[in-house]
Length: 398
Image 1 (cartoon, rainbow, N blue to C red):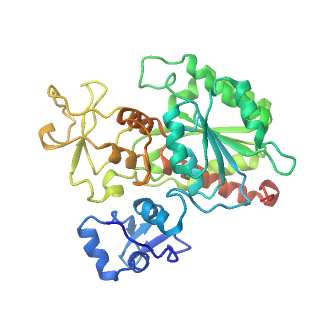
Image 2 (image 1 turned 120 degrees about the vertical axis):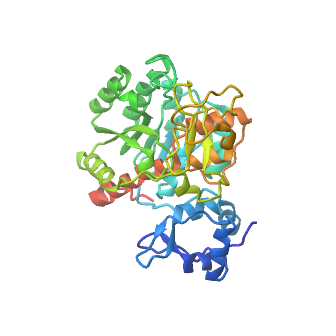
Image 3 (image 1 turned 30 degrees about the horizontal axis):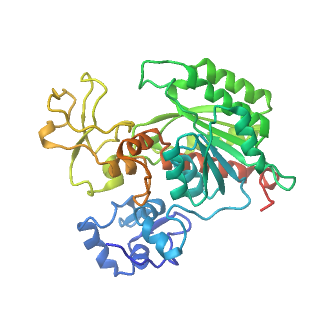
């Protein structure tokens, strides 16, 4: 049921948490009604308990769950966010369907534009992010530079550049270790070096760190004057209900900012991984689910009391010949696969996200995406580091 929200009611400013009283005021109901809504699965499960033992919900959980209601109440796109104008503006290359851009928006960066070569990803991005994406062959460095020159001005620094160059040739998902698409990492680096943004973020699969293409890309960036560091982050420790390890590479011209980002990462990783139940509560109406394994040497049935395995770009039904696995938490006749919408939520896209594609392409976009809350985690580290570094490191042009 769609609700009209009182968006003047926000979470606690210090903790960014809604307690029962605040949530009731937001939903325009009595506090006692919150328990009833939880019992009818018309609310997400609470994030934690406060010092008094009461349930509390993280701001982003509530804003994601009621994305359409926030949009219709405020007149803004469902996934828009307030921006901090003093932070550098951002451009997203290899933007896909918008997971990285949305995470930066939620951390209050002003994302100006996205670029990707895949038509349905560009259309999905544009339908959701509140600013346009452009279809562009990012493997063509000259064409990419020409497209980005519009953001060069004498009045403001060039926007920061973030992106996730396609990872298939690095990924353990396929038989290739390094191939033609791996050089897109080097091309990303070449574009960054050309425009000299205040910082860059590059996301890739964990094993990319050992590739020759990645090492060449880092060399290009260091020669351009960036202090570069990298870390493999487990998304389940960054607010995502999924065991998904990703290589995050960050560079800044100020070594102190790069160091501060990685110190922030270390200080803010969760002590325990987020489980599927932590995210959905009881909304899935199942205690287990099937995720088709790459081979029958791996298990296919998982509990919602653990993080999801990595969401891939395919979502297959349970095959009639599935033999079972010793690690399965139940038999396949007692479970079901996740739906497309559920898989998108495990990638922490809000329920109101619009997918402008066939089901097959939508599943691929979801599997390719940077989890939104992993992107937000990275963006928050950058915002904290930039703020701590002083006003001279921020874009004060407005």
